[in-house]
Image (cartoon, rainbow, N blue to C red; front, side):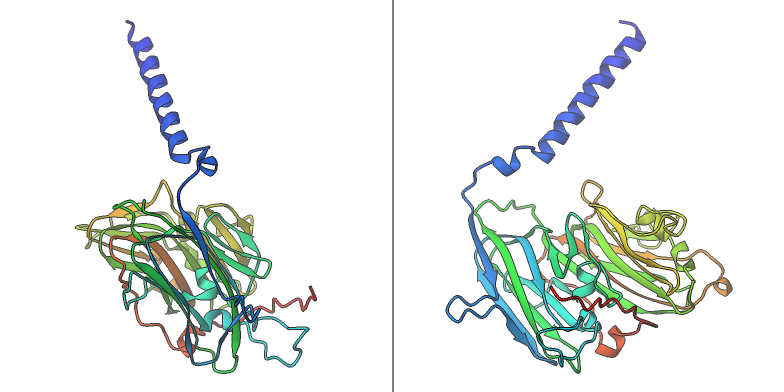
Amino acid sequence: MPKRTATKIFLLVTLAGLAQADQGANDPLGIARLRDDTTRQLTTFNLETRNKVIDVPRGKAVTVGEVKGNGYIANLWLTFPGWFWQHWNPSAPINPTILKTLILRIYWDGSDKPAVEAPMGDFFGIGLCEVKSFASQYFGMSSGGFYCKFPMPFRKGFKIEIENRDDAIDTIVFMNVLYQLTGNIPKDAGYFHAQFHTGKNEGPNPVHIAEWTARGQYVGCTLSMQGEERNYLSFLEAPEYIYIDDDWEKPRITGTGLEDYFLGGWYFREAEFAGPLHGVPVKDALTASVAMYRAHDADAIHFRERFKMDFVNPWAPERLKPFVYSSVAFAYLNTPEGQNPPTPSANELLCWYRLRDRDHQSIP
């Protein structure tokens, strides 16, 4: 057989195999397959009193609910007031900082260390104390609602808690968490984790995104940044440095720029966009504000023992200017116990230089 023909046949067979594997992975009939799962929903709605919400007073942490069993969370949705004008309660205080001071926590399998711990705004994609509609495959803000569709397995149960660190606003929360009880959670299915970081940066310091000691896979992050000086976006020059297992002194994975990691370019030259797995819901050069997200699926980053991710700016320190950032990193780990740093104080959470007025005061 001629060499060129053999190569052509090999290529066709390889492509056919890849296509078949891809079809199996995506499973076009997945939504049509009948399963023996038991579908339930944890909700703040009380069927007896007809009350839709739970109260989350300032300075308090409230347990929304606990579930026992084996299964996975398939969809988490919630909303809350405080960040917009309420036509039904005109005297209610308004402050978009509630998006930063209202903290979501999720505990797996009886652990006392939350695997998920992050401010609401950051967890759902925008950490700039504002709401803007965008829809990605795994999380988003949808015209007043907040949703997350990362599958979240549990083997003994889960607990959801919300803490209000605001010093002025007592709020309420509407929440629906749809979960499936099933005996078919694979042994190799990891627990969902979300780790929050924030802080002011003088310019040259690394932007720390995540660090875990476990076996797992990193599946993405949200990152919001704001320059102290208006029209300053050079913090986007920082490529990712990803340290994995034995590659701890020198990063195993590096990139070419921060906006490049989020699959954009030239400081997101063509402005805002929202895709299924990556996007820039906010880019405002005038206020030097950017909010970005990226989710990894087939390109998840795997680690056996430990993982660390930073963004490090290669420019000379004298060329760089101060900025502030906040981020939430997502991963699946082989442990239900969280490895999150202590939640910052309200003052540390609200370290932003300026907030945009995004309340349109519309009446539904």
